[in-house]
Image 1 (cartoon, one colour):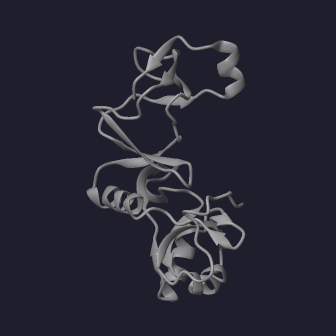
Image 2: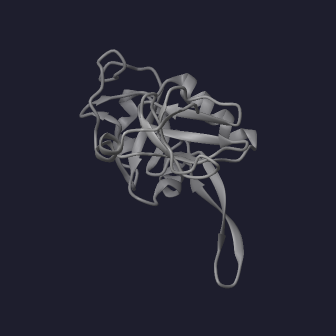
Length: 194
C-alpha cells in the first residue's frame, strides 16, 4: 500500500536528516511494532485513546491506536532497513523507495492532543466540499456540504498524508460522509458548518 507523493515533500537516498514517517503495519500489530522499534532504539510514536469495553463479567478501559494500522517513526533514510525489518511493518508510506515524511507541525499537533488528557478518538476524514449526513441531534437525516472544518464544540485535526482525522470532542454532533453515488442521487438539503 503506497501512495504517490510529490517530489518536493518526498525523501530518498542522500537525505541524512531524521524525519517523521508513517509506517503501515499489519492489523492489530501497532503496539508490538512500537515496542520493536523502541528495542532497536528508534524514535517511535503510537498515539492511543481509551474506550470502555464491556464483557459478560466486567467493564474495562482499553487503549486503542488513534490511527489504526499506522505507527509513526523518526529516522533517516540510511536507517530504513532496521525499520522495514521490524516484525509487523508492511511498508513506509510513500511511493517505492521514495518516502513521504509527515510535517513536523502535524506530528506536534498529534502529540499535544495525545498528552492533553481531552477525550480524543478517530473520526472519518472530512474535506471541505464533501457531502455529509447528520446522524444525531435535531438535524438527523439532513445531508449537507462541509464548508468549514472548524467549530466551537469540536475540533478536527487532519493528517493530510494519511487522509485520516482525529476529533477532540468537547460536545459535538455526529456526521458521516455520504458515498459519492448516493450524494449525487440524493442531492443535499443544507450546508453543514462543522
